[in-house]
Length: 368
Ligand code: NAD
Ligand code: AHE
Ligand code: ZN
Ligand code: ZN
Image (cartoon, rainbow, N blue to C red; front, side, top):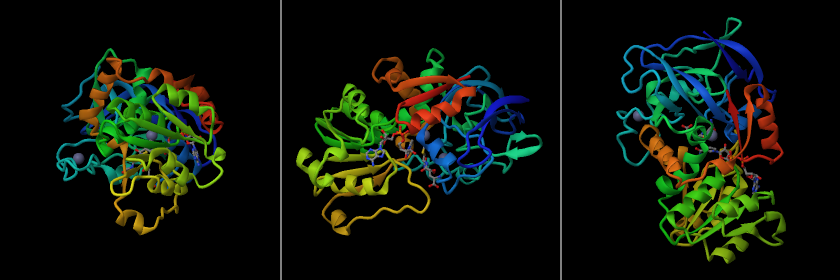
């Protein structure tokens, strides 16, 4: 079939909206009509050329929601008409990782996914006879896409696509990092670095679990108001701190029980670790750093009881947890609407990237 898609032909060039060819689903695969997709900073990261796994030409996008339109042979867990959220972290429920309660990182299809192809090693997308690569197993910047069934969370049909698409990455990553990865206890203190599409969801997760102090750190003063609306108790703009930022944060919190890095900046990651409380503070890295970047700290920071952790997709097991997060939204327990600051048709998708660069949006959502 033909479908409209925003194609990344080369790194650091605007996406081009063209009609591409899409092959139907093979064994274990599903054709999905994407109804809406968010634009995450990770799409920008890959498009910029900073992603060691980034390969072109590709159809980016990994924060979508849509409807099943066709199932391939052997598919049993979804059927035509089901509403689904694509999962860049699938859940096969049978690999060594899925069977270990310590991780959500299903590895069943990770190697082919990282190469931009389906589990059988081929792509379903092409343009003028040339292969186009899939991205993070999702490619939601295409109106129609093909995914393995293990990479689809089936969700309730009354949930609006233009909002729940954000659960496909940002919402789950932020709330999940608090609830599933860090398992933050009520009455904790926390510092959140980066008040964007992820950091604000970390803040709403912290409020949900009853954190007592939630410090937000961002260089953009425009983020303060929305972060307070989501539960931030103190705002720190590093530009306004005259001395050492780490010392300032330790003074403010007494040493944080938890910190979350939601930027992808390795210098900030160090500050995030070192502002944690001696003996027990845990810092969670969420931000994705460019090729070649490395973190550092004095080992003494760890010897003296601080913990450094990472979180992918908030530690969520997609097919199990994503439908529950959709329920939380539908029950009014989490706010997604206030974070979707811009919507646009696919033709204007590059404007979504411009708004992100300018720091003017939280989440832009493309509506098909
Ligand atoms: P975003 O662009 O919406 O937000 C980033 C925020 O960081 C902005 O508000 C910006 O002003 C602020 N910022 C930038 N540099 C700063 C600095 N030095 N000090 C303080 N604030 C600074 O991005 P996002 O969509 O929220 O994504 C954030 C990061 O999380 C990205 O690296 C993204 O790739 C990553 N991410 C990771 C996962 C995961 O599963 N681990 C999932 C989604 C996104
Ligand atoms: N390809 C990059 C790493 C990118 C990365 O860490 N991705 C996160 C999700 S970001 C969503 O916005 C993730 O899930 N990581 C685990 C995984 O298996 O990719 C690189 O540095 O190579
Ligand atoms: Zn993302
Ligand atoms: Zn698995």
